[in-house]
Image 1 (spheres, helix red, strand yellow):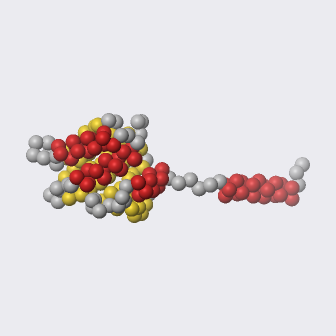
Image 2: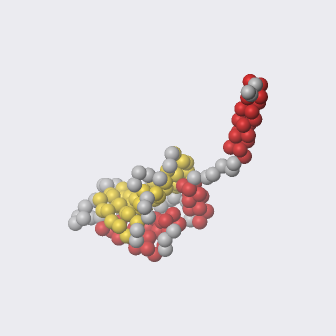
Image 3: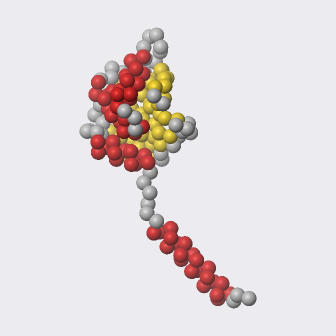
Length: 157
């Protein structure tokens, strides 16, 4: 039979070993943080603003809002950008550069898809356009003052 003193000592030793094992493991950065730092390092003018839950907010002179989202209900990654209703070529270039880095696909594919999506909004198709291009889901929306694009990739892709 084990005495109480030996039992306490063995429990304390295992607790100390478990604490040492968990504290010695390195901290893992989130994929969103890694992608945001990569964007800030490779695209001129992009700065990491702050992180809230699974969304990293970025800033760039060509956008009003710019963010990267990770692990949503239906997507694994999301790139969101908002600008004035009359968007400029710098905005599309930023979306193309960021999309190529975030989704690891060729830049010309992202340029083509985002340009098509943004230019389809109008009288015939309306103010909300959803399309799929090269395994990316793109949703473009505009209001009286702003235009935005959300580029996502599904969880299964």
